Structure formats: C-alpha cells, structure tokens
Length: 369
Image 1 (cartoon, rainbow, N blue to C red):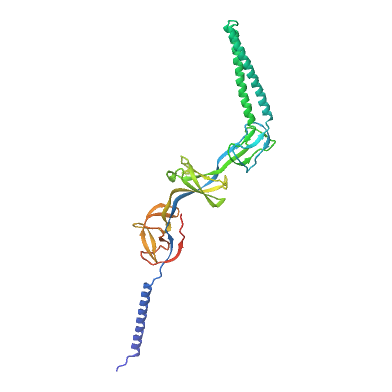
Image 2: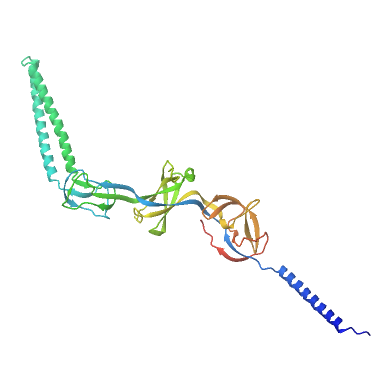
C-alpha cells in the first residue's frame, strides 16, 4: 500500500478545518436570520375626547369697568370713608365735603323762591282785579297792561329762583361723593381736611368681578374668530390655575405695521384672584371638537397614498391608512382608520414594516389634548 507524503496530509487536514469552519458560520448566520431582535417602540392609546387648535398670545389683565372719581363742588373734605383696597357698592358714600356753605346757599335760594311765589300770588290777584275794572271801563288799558306786565315779571323771577334752588340743591347733594359703580378702591388721592376742587382726581374704582384681557392675533386667522369663542387664560402670578374666558369683542381693523388684530377676552373673577395689571397668556381656540378620536402628531407618517400609522396587533404592527380631521396643538383628529382603545406607535417608527414584530418599551397615558 502506497503511503501519502506528509505534505499531502497537511494540505488535506487544512482543507477539512476550513470546510468545517465555513459550515459553522453558515449555521450561525441562518440562526440569526430566524430569530432577529424586535425593534423597541413606544405606543399611545387612541382616545375619544376634546381636541382644539389654539393660538397663544400675551396680554395684560384690565378691569371690566373703571371709574375715576372727581368731586363736582369745591370745599374742604370733612370725612373720608374708604381707603385703597376697600370694596364698595354702587351708591356708597366715599367722602363728604363740608356742606355748611352749600346749606346756607340752599336756604337763601329757597327764601328767594318763596318770596317770588308770594309776590306772584299777589300780582295774580291784582291782575284779576284790574281786568274786572278794565272790563267795567273803570281803568285805562295802560293800567291793565301794567298789571299784566308786573304779573309776568314776577312769574319770570319765580322761574329763575326755581332754577337757582335746583342748582343749590344739586350742589348740596354733591357734597356727598358716592361710588358710581361697584368695585375696589385702587387709588386714593385725597385726605381729610384738604381742599378739593372739581378738577382734582380723588379716587379710582375698578370693577373686577369680571376682567378682560386684550391680545393681538395674526391677520390670517381673522376670518376664524367669532364672538363667543373660548379663550384659555393662564396668569403668570397664578400659574397652577387656568381660566376659561369668552371672546366678547373683535376689533374691526388690522394693524398695517404688525399685521395683527385685537380681540378682547372676558372672564369671570368672582373670588378676585385675578387683578388688573397682571400678565396673562391667552390660548385662543381657532377650531375645536368636544369629542373626537385623536392621535399624537408623532405617530403619523406621510406616504404616497396619504398619511398612515402603525397600529399594534398583539406583538406586531399593522400599517394603516388614516383620514385626518382638524389639527390640534399636539394631536390630529382621525376620522377614519382607528377606533377607541387602539394603540399606535409614536416612537421607534423608523424602519418599521407591516407585520413586523416589535417590543413595547413604554406607553403614554391616555388623555385629551
């Protein structure tokens, strides 16, 4: 029997090792292809709730009504009944100007009127007597005309004294300065014992059980705004308490410089938490639905046929075309393609294909926008 040389044996042994190694590599590759690691995704549950599109703007809180109080008569201030921060009701007395001089003027004017009234009564009687005598041809026409003129002159004096009495009475009443509106005294500029005059500002009253916020919005949404629309207000000084207001006024013109228009949002403030001058951030609702199926914007993918999402079906994803409704701030309304309770992928979408197995690493809580 012919023996193989050492060189031939070495070559044969090396080839055997290479062949075994390639076979092992092929098996490992096939095993890796059979059991790939599923991609990790984050999902969100489809909900049925409110959705809205808003525009945010910054404004300043102002009182719904304001009154600047100035006395209508001059005089020395006798008493003041209020101070800054006091709540007042319409008709409450704020201060009293010393009425002594005005009382004297009223009494004098009343005496003049009473005298004119008595004089008129006498002149009327004289005129009646003269008319009787004139009819009997006992007095001349001139005498009768003089009696008639005297009666008319006294009547004029009575009318004049009546006007003066009314003015004196009004001045006397104006010594008591009262609140024209209900609200809060925000400023007081007078003190007891000082002289005051009609041109002097004495108090400022603000009505703040309702307040308003004026904000500027871009002209492109002018046609979408309607009186009665909702505005969501956040106050910097009260960050943890949002307020819902109503658009009560839309200004009719566009500012040509800023290309904005102004709206007034009114909100109830029964507990007076919101005060005039506070900075307010308003979210004006352009479009809204009270009940709508919605998904986060991050779940949507735009393809050739339109927008689609990946719905979770057990541990696999299903590519689903959807129809969009209104756009919210962070979500889209879905009018076709999903149902309440469906779970859609919002993170880890890249690389997904229809029917692919996935691993859920987190789920966002279901909530309305």
